Structure formats: structure tokens, C-alpha cells
Length: 359
Image 1 (cartoon, one colour):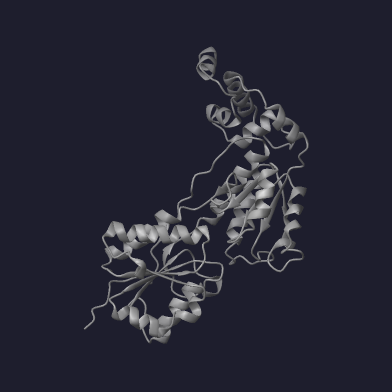
Image 2 (image 1 turned 45 degrees about the vertical axis):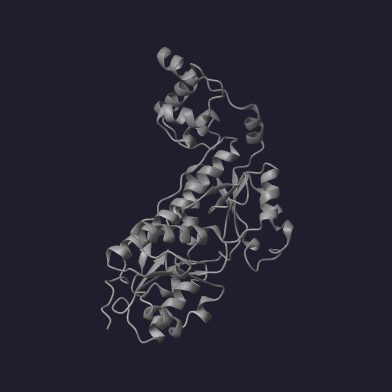
């Protein structure tokens, strides 16, 4: 133990953190927090594990942060979940359901209960008022999810030091902790698969907003075109506030006449871009993938899951929910922590084939 202690403390200028204790002990940060906090939750921890944590803490010279301890003393082990999109009640096919499964499982494993702020979703009582977010202070910290979030109210929570985590990147709010999926790499891979199938003209269809998830998908799409040596100019991206109105069979025929053989749509809460593409193909009397290939950057709307599975990628919603709780629990404990971007696995699907031979 002497050697470990000398190694752990040599040259240190900052206070050891629980994350370092966890690495040295070979356990999770949650276990370290439980052991060093006296395991007030009564969660079963073996004596061997407890001893590993205590030895590692002693080796590193870990001393609990007094500020964090005062904050912890006032905690009630409640974490909030606040959605800016109608989420509850829901069924297992709802796109937010896997997020909530990951949130619940990770929170339970860490001894936290959840408070669901259901009245704050779209249409809920007082959802549009700035003070709606103040209710989350009933919890020790809060997880937020939704495509569009009110920046001013979130900024106030962050400035007040209230533990906040957002599922999805929010670069416009400095200091806001986020967890996110790697949409750039996943979108780029979809383009690479289309190029490998022989497609040389590909168009992205997206909604006309600046949501970070949409921006990341577009960046990945254009990156994939450039890496494949394909045209990546303005004509490669179709943006419209109402794709279901503007993306018609006539528009589709015009793009096909220009040599486009594949279209890629982004996933959104409404699924408008994907719906518009599939409807345009049907109205044009074409078949997918025989006449045209389609890909989806995300998952199809729940009411369309009975159709052929679209080629694209899956969003790791359960993993994102769990990562968000890990990060939020660390912030509640007064610790610094980050969560890496979560990879989106490619989904082969059945909507992409080789480009058709046209006269």
C-alpha cells in the first residue's frame, strides 16, 4: 500500500476525485459514492468491494469536498425528468420510451427516485411560462430532453448552480452539461454505404430549423459526400419548413431527371421528412429500392414500423438515458464529469439497392 500511496500522491496539486478512486479500486463511481457516503441507501455492497474503495481512497489521500458534503446533506435522492415535447403517457413504440428506460434503470441502480414533470410537456399546464422550469428545483438535479429547449430558463438554472443535464448537444448554452449521440459519424457512414452501392448523386431532405441534432446530421452527410468524392454543393441538401407540402412527386421526378438516385431523410419528432419522401415515391408510381433508394438518419415514426425497415442508423436511446443519469448523479455529488458521444450503430435495412439503369 505504501507504494500505491506514494504513486497516487506524488506531484499532485489538486484534490483527488471520486472518479480517480473508482479507477484505482476497479469499481464504478456510484459504488465509491455509496461507500464513502456511508451507504445510507442500504444497497448491498460486499465487504471486499467496500475495502477496495477505502484502500484506494486512502492511497490517493482522498478527502471529501466540504462544499459537496454540505450539498449532499441537503439532498433527498430525487432526480427530475423534464421534457419539452409531449412524452407522457406513452407506449413502448414512442421514440422517447427507450430514453426513459435507460434513465429509470440507471437511476434505480444508483439509489435515486425519479420525479417526472409531466405538466411541463407540450400542452401541459403552464408549459409556456418561464417559471415552468422552476418546479424542477424540487429535485436534487434535473434531466432535460426535447428538440427545442428555452435557452433563457435553462441558462438561469445553470448560472444558479443547479445540476442540469440535457440529452442532446446544446452548444449555445456554455456550461450546460450534455450527453449526445455521434450523429456526424453515423450520417457519414450512411453516405459511405450508399456510395459503395454505386450511388453518385445523393440528396439530404431535412426540416428548416437549426436544432443541433439536425445540424450534426447535415455535417455528417456532407462529410460523407466529400470523403466519397461526390457532389456536396447546396443542391445536395433540401431544407423546408414543411417537407410534406413541398416534397411532391413532381419534385422527386425533377431530381431523378438530374441524376439523383438516392435520398436521405433526417429523423425528427414528427418524422415529416421521411413521410414526405415515402409519399412522394408512392405518388410518383415508383418502387423502393428498385427505382430509387431511401435512407433514414434515425428511426422511423412508430406508426410506420410495419413497413420495410429503412436503411440508416439507430439512435442508442437507452444508452443515452443511462449516460445522462450518470452525468447528473456526478453533478449532484459536486463532481466534475463528462460522458463521451455515444455511437449510433448502422442499420442495413431494406430500402437501399444499386442505382437503377435508366435510358
